[in-house]
Image (cartoon, rainbow over all chains, first blue to last red; front, side, top):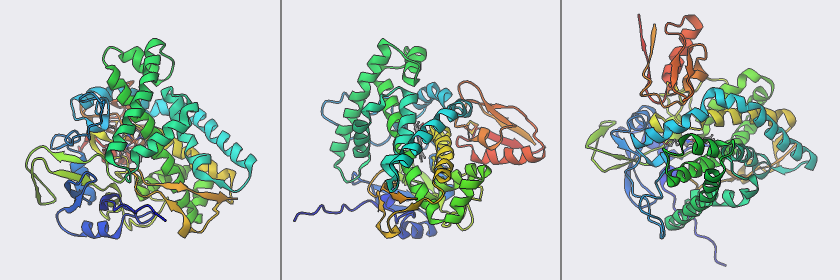
Amino acid sequence: MATAQAPVLPLHMRRDRFDPPAEIAAIREQPGLGRVTTPIGRPAWLVTRYEDAREVLGDATRFSSAGLPVIPVPGAAPGEQRSGNLLMLDPPEHTRLRRLLTGEFTVKRIRRLQPRIAEIVDAQLDAMEQAGPPADLVPDFALPVPSLVICELLGVPYADRAEFHSRAAKQLDLTRPLEERGQVAMESRAYMGELVDRAFAEPGDDMLGMLVREHGDDLTRTELIGISSLLLIAGHETTANMLAIGTLALLRHPEQAAVVRDDPEATAPAVEELMRFLSVVHTGVPRVATADTEVAGQAVGAGDVLVVSLPAADRDRALVEDPDRLDVGRAASHHVAFGHGVHHCLGAPLARMEMATAFPALLRRFPTLAPAIPFEDVDFRSASVVHGLRSLPVTW
Amino acid sequence: MKIKADRDVCIGAGNCVLAAENVFDQDDDAIVVVLEESPQDEDAESARNAVGSCPSGALSIEET
Ligand code: HEM
Ligand code: SF4
């Protein structure tokens, strides 16, 4: 019988369940930088310490996010794959696009969404309760909540979810050839192209409509497609994985789950600590040095690639004491799980609001919630750009 | 203490508003607005926290 060969993942994309692998922790103890090979086979420096991570991510002049070539896909016009994708642009182009969007993600704007987010969460919990235990937390809760939220916000029909969920998962799946992932990314753009054209013809009240109405003259069609494709994928994949793996982490520490369930004041710090402890995004976009420089005393040449391990930086003793312990009671808001510098997560206020609504609501609805399988059997989603769980059978 | 915010550097992430609501706000484009330049007591503590959590380096404190 032919079995799929387990791919050898680059070190910076490996996990040991909740934790970064021991090899990465060992590199963090050594002076200088580590060495890894990126999925495209290029050697790169591995940044593991908190201060070094902030230095590299915080300096877009010395460390470019636009430096790596994209894998060309047949049929894509030059520059099309990067267009509008904030993650892969440098200032000043990055600044121009980002400023068009930030107004939609202010703390105030997101607070206004809270009641609607709570409704979405409750409807999902109602459905779980009616169906009765057991449930699979990933398809029944963790994935639909952020998907529904970003669909409504952006103006994407939720009925199309099966397709865009599957495309997003493929785009992030590190076991698939880069050409295939690039091809799927272009399919996502084609899908978004139809929605964008519809918005140009008849701009609605959603974010696509707003962007067309207010910035239709400042944005090209490809830029708008790039922006919305990024918002759709970043808007559901990341938060969905945090909700699933975050719930598992809480259930492994029942006394901490009880705090999140019973004390509303505890929610905000608990969300930050779960973000820090789990740091589900392994690394941001690899950075490329724009000139000869030095990081952590190590000479780095112009053109060198640097990969910043976010979980390694967030488990550095320089950030918190006893970093490998989950402690929802501590104040850990300076983590880099949302990145750092000009590319710091645009959706952070939304993601925080979704998590702060979803975790306590889930634990309150099912006070006896527990995994329905032994911890050893939990299907961690390794080999993806975003760490998480493939499924989480639960009972109550 | 005196809070300084560089509105050209700010990327509108809102970490400061979450950390110190009495001290910082965001305008309609999400760019930081300082509500209280010389916060006292608890607000001073939160403001320090906010400066540390700002991802763009837009915030600074001048001790007076
Ligand atoms: C728990 C959930 C989330 C996590 C862990 C997360 C993490 C991150 C990280 C680490 C980055 C920086 C990448 C880099 O520097 O290369 C980032 C950027 C970004 N995120 Fe998130 N994110 C989350 C939720 C969201 C949501 C809900 C949205 C959209 C609604 C979103 C939209 C974006 C966008 C547009 C960027 C690019 C910003 C830029 O390059 O200027 N994210 N996110
Ligand atoms: S935390 Fe920094 S970047 Fe974010 S809004 Fe406040 S000042 Fe601007």
